[in-house]
Length: 440
Image (cartoon, rainbow, N blue to C red; front, side, top):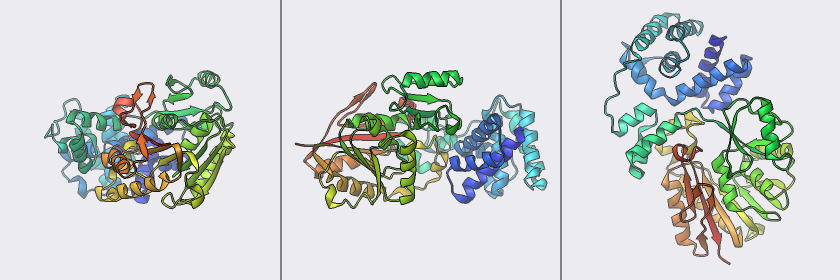
């Protein structure tokens, strides 16, 4: 059935390119279409994500051993070549001959019979040389990093302006690793220890994070197939986002506003931390996204959450200084979650240029909702200073009634109330959190 997995991976790549859809949604669709067993579904996901993570790297060697330029190849043919190249260069357990032959067969079954000779020739040459591949030229430059780790040159150059070369390379490398699946146990329904025993009985390996009880990292797989999904015994949330909510200090009886809340992870974390005692208003500008929050809260059995559609930049008069805690998880470039959503690396710099202005506007508007002595949590899933530290510096310069408040959670220690999570340092998504306190 391995070639069914390759056909599914090829179709997922084509859907990502044609529809501009998230890889996760495309993978889910093709895995259902082909009715793949767990092993083949895992291979499909590995192939699709691996190609998206390493496309520029694969293209370099395809171009090196092909008589035709990669940009002259039809996209579907290039996808087949990338699938073969990725298998040859990254998946040691797949024999080279099998990888080549299966991709030639895939090329034919995809209606590209005339190109099968090209696929065979290019992949055989890569297979013959994979133990002694020529080095990509220009090591030590932004161009080399961009090609070696398949990230856009503009992003690499920007990171190098903000960080040292070794730091930037480590971040890019971490973005190409296979991400785990982090879940949070719903301790309103089950003690963390009991759920861990349920995972062990199901022979599902996991890693605990002692500083966050009930925060578990798994190897991956279908979320809905995990023990207790229907019963609402857990929800999916990265450790960095959970840390941010913990830092905010949600407590029983509080009145909380979670702006830009979909799909609801921070609202769920706050409700559990509050013992489901108090009230949480979860808002999003898109009404259809509110249904995700509502269905999630219902599955988890959380009654303190209600939803409302609104633009975070337009605060209602009734919300003025009405909340003990305001969570501002603002729209951002998403460059911190590239390892989970590799298609994000296709973004152009011009697409994110206007985000800081929007982020500042949202933060300013939401600050009016915070009570005296209350907390304002600003967060993003990106790592660019223009969307993070610079936003906070500008806000504090214009709002002297707010001050940063440091926090500590296990090894995480903020400076000036701010902390940036990095995948190569913290083992989490790239994520930024800032805790601000309104003065009494």
